Length: 315
Image (cartoon, rainbow, N blue to C red):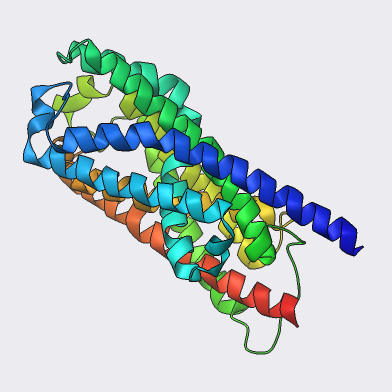
């Protein structure tokens, strides 16, 4: 049995290293391009030279650098000695950004290039955009796989086993169920609104901005709605322990959804063109702030679930 366990551990570490190195290679072009844009070099449009755009690019430089460090931690033994919060927090934020974008990249990539060329971007921008999309796809594939191996080695209770592992005295299940139902209701409401808008609904949309709803806007709005629904399902299953025999599917759905709702809406708030969005100001603020709050609340509930689950398994 010990030989088999050693082989499994060795195989897992090999996969972690391959995916971790792959993520490092993939994120490097993105990091260099964002650094160049932050300093005003190789800008595709004059508009991106504004201070607001440079601030956004600087923020993405930090995100890319953190992703590179995480990839190193996932493929090195010393990564398992890092404090849990130092790994979990950026991973939660990063997977929420990358995984939804990975699913949309085949469509959003060409759509973004077409939109920017129509806005007057230089021909050189096409090659920069290709590097950016390749980097995002590479990181979106390699980093979650490296994370899966890392989590399986360090936190096996978070990636496997049955949905119900029992409970010990002092558990918070009733609190989880109450909060989970409230947050799930909020996610469903947000999802209905976003899908309604993505399908062409105009209630809450500024009439003067109807023609500005391009493919990019429709897909991102639809993605937010779908992930809100997925998060509601995952959260209800995790807290009630009904709807799935395995723990991993609802955990993945709730984890990605919570990170997505928080990170995407946070980036929407700090974008320079936030005040020029297609929605009415009140609808825009309410849906954006709701997404941020729901993402944070989902993250807190996930922590409660994992805490009780770890206690039950260790007993």
